Length: 51
Length: 227
Image (cartoon, rainbow over all chains, first blue to last red; front, top):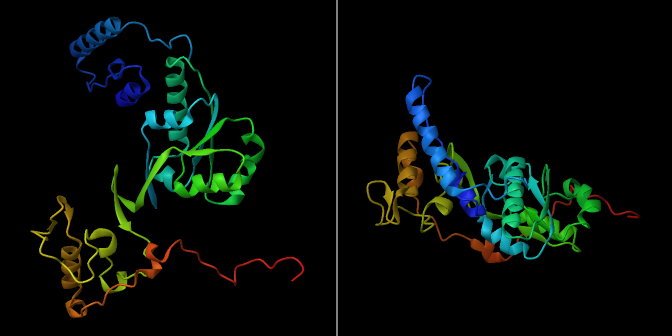
């Protein structure tokens, strides 16, 4: 999916898949925070209001 | 089955040129099974083209449909009335489907969205391997059911060659030597004596060397009216 987003021109880094078990709460929060930071750096999805 | 894979998105976009209204037509047979051109892949490609064209500043209207078999007139004929409204059609069928569309609907241009790769099978989930080259003169009966035409890099009829090392083909250690496989199988079946006989050169006239091929079955043809 990341490759496809790259091909489209939206940026493959906007999507990530992480395997975590239900017992890994702190790690989940950490991954979400990292993703939030990355997405904020990338800026708004240019197609957010069009699709 | 016919195995295919999708062309790069950029190539499909380039083939479409200035088209503003596009129809993507999938096929519900071989390319659905190999995850290249079924309903799901049509949907993904349509979404990708919509997004890509919007980012390019030339938004495209992309519609989707999938027919059961794109290589037979009766399955594509129902599309006839809706094709006029499109600037271009992208077929996610094999090369046969693409040509069937162009032949049946000559006023519209149908572009290929896939690269048709080979006749093969899924060796495991997500891995397809070639098994047949449709040479028109099957020799599986004398090669223990393993095809050296499709699976031996040199298409040898009397193998293996000197490039066979530890069961691997010299072209790539990931390619098993077809003749090693044949040898092991005949030994297992106790039919080694059948393999000792030297096979004469193959008659390639039934393959592509004889030009485009055609089969006519008179017993199956429909009588023309008035005859």
